Structures are given as structure tokens and as C-alpha cells.
Amino acid sequence: MKKLVIIPAYNESGSILKAVEDIREHAPGFDYVVINDCSTDETLAVCREHSLNYVNLPVNLGIGGAVQTGYIYGCQYGYDMAVQFDGDGQHDAAYLEMMAQRLEETGSGMVIGSRFIEKEGFQSSGLRRVGIRFFSILIRILTGKRVTDPTSGMRIVNRDVMHIYADNYPKDYPEPESVTAILRMGKKVTEIPVVMREREEGTSSIGGLVSVYYMVKVTLAIFMEWLRK
Amino acid sequence: MMTVKLQVVIGIALLLVFAILVNMIRRRSLELKYALSWMAVLCALLGFVCAPGLLIVVSDFLGIYAPVNMIFFLGFCFSLVIIFSLTVALSRMSNSIRTLDQMVALNEKRLRELELELKKTKAEKQSKGE
Image 1: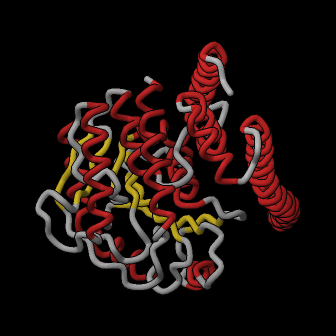
Image 2: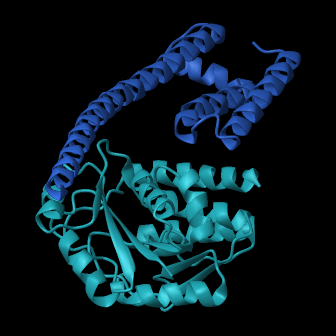
């Protein structure tokens, strides 16, 4: 089984090396690729200095475009599964093997590392939790399937879904929309409990008024996905 | 201000436009992100059609004598906002294209140089082999 870790990175010069080392140490069965989303800090220099395996985007695309580049890479190089992994140190590479196993055992299209099954570790801020709960309920209503952490960036997919995402992936706030898309296509989505750490360096890209736009846009986008099948 | 007939006609037209918009987004002919401003305008117009009293309230608030004038004025303002947002998106996009153009050109040069080097190394190996 060829397994790939996709690490989208935008201005993660402080934590990207640690993330890669975490993968090398705790998930040696995985290959990795850093997708440098036209960072304005020293992320690219760090990648070059330490000979990391990276792809350098000449124009910034945002998280959706960067992750999609990873999926395209996965298809081109013939990987059987691809997992998304944050470059900021929030994700723990120890879960990767577990997720790969669960993917195979259950024959799922996707396995999500959910923060909210065991409710351990970093649980995100209160307002965000309300938003996440909202999307959880919305997806339940529209697809009948239960997803406790639809915004989790820690997700592993099989080859089928990799190809689907390589062709079509949302540009911003992609997680809830993309889960809905494959659920509507009849793909199986399973979850395992994971513990995430608090963000060490850098800043999150969602805050304040942007949150309102985010909620409206993602809600509409989920309805669109529901309409597509 | 608005006859019931006019309300129904405009209402149906708006719903039709809304359906066309949604279908285009569904088919991926239109990006949801850019369609949002159009959807906002449609909702505002539908609001006025369903509650014509709102027309009078808003035109009074804005200090405009005739509600009909206010519709034209607001419609014009909405159009300007949408056009401006498109101008902004266009500017960003033209910059992205410029960067891509340059990257492709520079990558092509690197490839050419690599091919040349490869040919040279192969030629040297061959001549050594003889």
C-alpha cells in the first residue's frame, strides 16, 4: 500500500520541520509531500535547507487549492491512500497508521480523525464548537450520516476519493463541503477519536466577521453538494 | 406603488432567475463565491416584492420622494458594488496569471538547460566508452 501524507503549509516556517519529523518517526510507512502555498515567510527556505519533499505553488491558492494539489500529486504518483496533515503541529502522527488500518478494514472512502468522540485534548473555542455542531446536524439532515467532526483537517482517503478530490475540491473552508460531496456519492465515511494539540506558532485564518461569511458560504455550499446528486 | 399583478410577475421572474443561478452553481458553471453577491441582490428584491410597505419605509429613511426612484437608485448602487467586486477579483486574477506566465517561462528555461546538460553528459560517456 502506497501511503501519502499531504502537508499544506502557509507560513509555517516555525513548525513545518517538526511536523515532518513527527511523521518520519511515528509513521515511517508513509511518504509525505509539503505543499508550500506561496508562503511569505521562510517556509520554502526551511524546506530547501532540510531537503524536505515539497511542491512549491507559485500563486497562493488557500487551503483548498493546496490540499487539492496534494491529491493531484497522489494520483500522479499512484498512491493508494492520502491523508491530510497540518503543518502547524496540531496533528499527531501517531494516529496515521491507525487511520490507514481503519480505512482498509472498513472499506471506507474516508476516515476522519475526530476531536469530539472522546472529547479529549484541544477542543477548539466555544463559538467554533457551535458552528461545528451546526454543520454536523446539517450533514445529518441532508445525508442521514453522522459526522461528529466535519471540519477536522485530519482525514485519510482511498484512491477513489483521491481522484474525486483531484478533480473537484472546494477553494476555501473545504472540509464540511467535501465530506458532504462524497457522502452524497455513497462513499462510506468513518471516524476515529483523536487528540489534537493547541496551535503552537502562527495564527488561525478564521476570526470575527469572516466567521459569518464562512458560516453562510459553507452552508450554501453544502446545500449545493446535496443538490448535485 | 405596486399592483398585485406586478408583484406576482416580478416575483415569478426573480424565482426563475434564482433557479437558474442555483442550477449554474450546481453544474459548476458559476463559482458560489462570486454568485453570492447576486444572490444577495435577488433576496433583497424578493423582500421588496413580498413586502411593498418596505419600499415606502426605506425611501422615507433615505429621504427619497418617490419609491420608484429609490428602486432605480438602489438598483444602480447594487450594480456598482457588484461590478466593483468583479473588478477587484479581476485584478487579483490578472496578477496570478502574470506570476504563472513568468514561472512557466522560467521552468521552460530550466528544462531546456537540463536537457542540454543531459545530452552533453551522454555524449561524454559515449566518447569515453570508445
